[in-house]
Image (tube, rainbow, N blue to C red; front, top):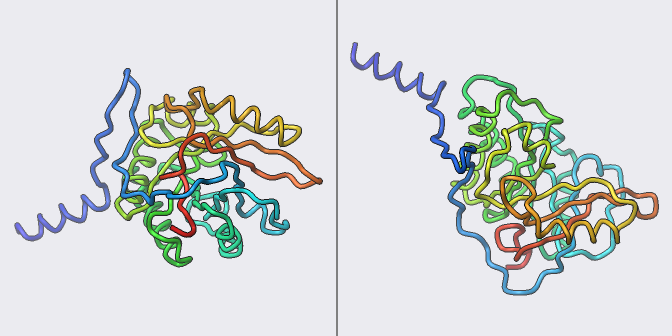
Length: 257
């Protein structure tokens, strides 16, 4: 009887794990994680970059030199595949710095903690499949385009996903527009780097100017952004461009350490 009770307890705890204990700062949820060892940069890095994913699968990848590239692992939702990740990742590695981003969501499917673990587990399997080295930063894309339930559950899913990725050796950060972060998490504070999405600009010069200005203002999570993204069109090709505000360690990994 005791053995049966213990077995039932173990199964129940796996199916419905206890939520993480998440603290507060100034009365707001504080989401953070203990980051793993990060690959240090020993050479300077051009602070301009691109990010690409499945929408660019049929587009020619840009040839203009930039310092870093961040590649989307999924096709817009968790547990999906960017069909041209391998091609884009190989192209990214022709630059000096690289990172990966993943999509996140919370469809209110069972335990929030377990769902966060599942996103992380799926991500780690895909990273290993494509031989993305441990130490490569993984950014969590948090946007209202995907399904979210409550702000408390969102904090649990995001926290657990970050915790599992960090434990596996991948530094983590959060990407998003401030309005989306406010709606999804209730404007939770953050203890990890942020990648701020600004939106569209008529040309690269105006986007860079806006990005530089944003580097010194709070983006979301009560943090100044580590990277700022803007969208600009050059030669009828619209691309996500990025400006790095801080030193690159923990934000992108060197291709040749």
